[in-house]
Length: 166
Image (tube, rainbow, N blue to C red):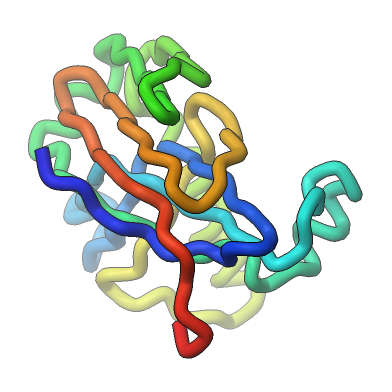
């Protein structure tokens, strides 16, 4: 499996969050679903301990979203059990069994409704990360991680220092 290098702030730290990612279609029937991982990185060490308001106000805390393989049969998998596991440096740091990927509906629908209420257009192709499945896992530069989505595939990443222009 290929390893994707994900840049983070070297002095602050990062978190790895496995997620399902929705790519909006012209209609909800045309939406597509992928496995993915959000990288949250910040220049402030210990931001998670400061509290939710600090995290929300730090626009740099979302450092990137890696979109992995598409779940081609996501409608059929809607209510089929799937186990997602997160590993950092070979150690399991989180696991969660889901009754299916139906969990994508809540965040997707919330964002669509919130954007419409705020007169914000969400064009076809907008990516929506739908929430950290196994939790928010702290990591540092040099950490390697495998995000295992069971039958849907896995992602392998390594956290590397971001260059100042990134």
